[in-house]
Image 1: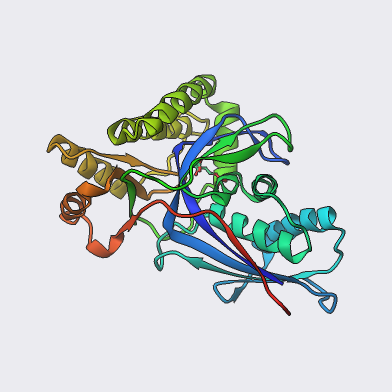
Image 2 (image 1 turned 45 degrees about the vertical axis):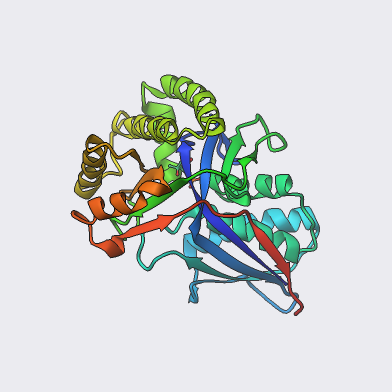
Length: 325
Ligand code: PMV
């Protein structure tokens, strides 16, 4: 039996499109910050007495497509370890209630950590990152804390994440504006492949990312938060341009997403350095220097109820515990 705790991450240079859908090899590199405030703990036990997989998330049984995805992932672990038994998986998402931020990144990173250890495997962090990738691309990066780069690679062996700065020694912080609690209608899995196949801008996106990876890494080395925020904001808007320009076109934004973007821009017009980013959903994350936190929270609280504003500094990498049965 083993338990793992993994934190979610938000990309500053986004991953949006796969080259290999089965192995989850991305089209581009990407770069993220692991968040302290949002994490998943998962316990796995492989048990010869079980006649089927038993899975719960937040104490609720998981069946159907969700269970299939987890079983498919556990099959990879069974294949690697030689272990044949079914598993009991109990997972808890530690995100503010109804945040709409329950991310597959922390979930599959924690599952990779707990399942591999429970099966008897002792994987290096690089190999854990490769394994987590098979569950969800963004999970690759959640093995590490701080600022993390995912090298796209060209096959299973070469596509993994690596930390750029595991413990931040400068004030970069994020704040999530909780906008929607419902499930997204278009999964990132489907959304990104429709962009790859149908957006006429996809070739330019790959150039955008190649350039942003370089400038973002330079901005991180310089601890230049306005540069980091600016590059992240432009990168997010260009990613979302791929959804608008797909056929059929769509968007993850809703009215409140646009309201939040406007609120951030207004604060910036007042001379406060803050920037926004969005993933495959309507929530907006704000990027800033922690010394400006109070002014930013106060400013956003004019538009959004304070309980919808969740501050998060950078978080740590995965932790795994062995447990006795
Ligand atoms: O790995 P997925 O399927 O959760 O896709 C992640 C896609 C984005 O969150 C939008 C970008 C990213 O790099 O995390």
